[in-house]
Length: 328
Ligand code: PEP
Ligand code: MG
Image 1: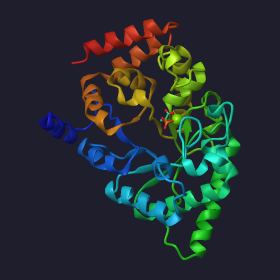
Image 2 (image 1 turned 180 degrees about the vertical axis):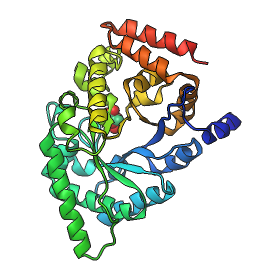
Image 3 (image 1 turned 60 degrees about the vertical axis):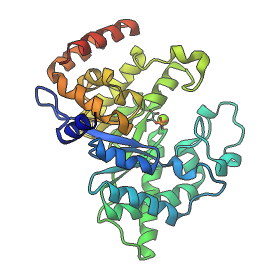
Image 4 (image 1 turned 30 degrees about the vertical axis):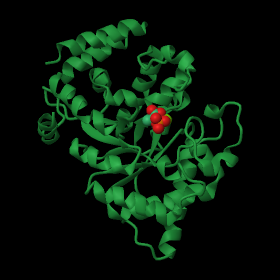
């Protein structure tokens, strides 16, 4: 299988009829970078920066963060690196912020992710400064988690501009242009407002894990309702479709970075809906690429169109499996 991996790494992710797909890696830990490169990642579509805040009682300094991001940017050797700002709260914990986050009755709906950053300005500013410093060493994109409104994006844009000014006054070397600022589409309200959000965001990354959780009101970590957690629910698919079409109309890049992006089963549906980039755990890159190379884009588009007319997720699953069974 090492041979298969090596061969797959070199060939492009392209459908039988010539549609190119961007293959990006989700990194949770820096040591996954090697695996990502070995598996042919063309960039990092999602760096979950939470790892810098876990298993410690203090907060990482700007220098420490800048070093960590720079190492990944340099490791990716010119390929784009999408750094997501801190996404703690809900199911993601950080001891140093436990007190600040408090004992919310509904942490998934509480102070978390970008909401925390906009309340704890210093926390967000420190991280953004570190990201801007790393951006002097390669192609960096900033990704904001749990966005639900335009004003959150506008506020962060303003903060990025201020932080860049401060860094310049400190004599820090920055890239000529500020990095693109994109948003996670993982709150149903954001998906429904995607046409408006596409006017203020430079790219979309669809987070199907949280999007499924919030759309169906199913805690993604709750075993008792795990059987109801279903990204093939037509409601979830409609939100993905709406957000994707909004991005395409606004001519901004759109990727999927939830678990479904790393599952070959979903490839025809996601490509058929117009998704251009898939970001996944490095271990999944080869088999997803294999599936992409075995299908027809035009046929996938037709399959997706038929699927979007269905009301029953069981039937949707069957149609998708039938399509995949025909893949060579
Ligand atoms: C998601 O919600 O789909 C996502 C990619 O982010 P995370 O899994 O880190 O919440
Ligand atoms: Mg998420």
